[in-house]
Every structure is written in C-alpha cells, then in structure tokens.
Image (tube, rainbow, N blue to C red):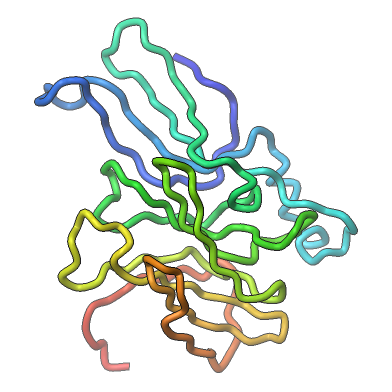
Length: 220
C-alpha cells in the first residue's frame, strides 16, 4: 500500500471511519489521519537561524497544507487517498503548532487551531493564529502585529459545562514573543477570536515552550 510522498510537519489527530453501523473490531473501513505536510523538504532547509532571522532577503516560508489521508483497512481494492482540507492561501501558506478540541482527539472533528502566517509574502515567520473549518475550508485568524509571533503550540480549553459537540465554546491560549523582548500570554474567545485577556510576562521565554492546563490552584 502506498500513497503520495510528503513531509509531515505536524499531526492533528487520527480516527476511523466505517461503512457499517457496528463495525467489527478493530477497524473495518478507513483509518483517517489529518496532518500538516509539505510536498518537499524545503521546510527543513528553511529552519536555519539565518533564514528565520530575516538575514536572507526575500526568504519565504515553505508551503504547508492541511490534508486528510484515508488509509483503507480491510477494504478490497481501495487505495490511499489524500484530500486538501483548506486552500493554503487562506492560512498564509504556513501552518504549525496544531491542536483540536481535547474531546475530539482520536475522533472526527470540525475545527483545527494552529499558528499561521498573516503578513503578506514573502514572510519568514508565522505571525498569527487561525481556526480552520475542516468541512468547508473557511479560516478565522487573529494577528497582533508583524513583530509578535506565537511562541508555542496553541491550547484550546473548553468552557466548563459546554456542549461537547460545540468545538468553539471555550478559549484559546496563545504564547507570544515580541521583538521588544517581551513575552505575552494571550487568551482568545474560541468563537469570535476576540482577545479576552492578556498577561505580559516578566521575562522572555524560549520559542517552542510547551504548555498544558491544570484545573484548580497549585499554590504558586
């Protein structure tokens, strides 16, 4: 079994689809994987310090697509298929640090959250966050300024008591780094992407710092 070649940069989630209402275990149908990928290895070459700092004039981030791969499992004669879920120009041709509603991990989902590019190309860094509708390819973006970039994977937190079927009822946490040396922790409304809160941290942290949410007080 083979499919088209690509370089995967980030996995979104994976789930199964079956033509049967009660498929026999483990899977009788298709294994579906949503992921961000490049058609070549340009994204690796583009990770150099010189390019990311803008020391090479005209450098542009490689094109990254959000795709859905369907892998047949026990389906006679079926082939691997690849579907682009969103035209790349809608998220600035670049996409990373992806997440979905935590209750949709490993299940079918509608929305994908992640970092994207908002500034006109050529652009040497991602400078916004987006929400992509995987059903129709529409995109909602948030952008602070060209000198502020998301610094870590986005995290979506559902509102307590929210309908589990509503993947936008909650807030999105975004760590941001500014060219002025300041780091910001921004909270966005999951539905409108309006800024709900912002905290300026007393120190700068490194790019790629991961985070999670812990319910309740931990006594800090």
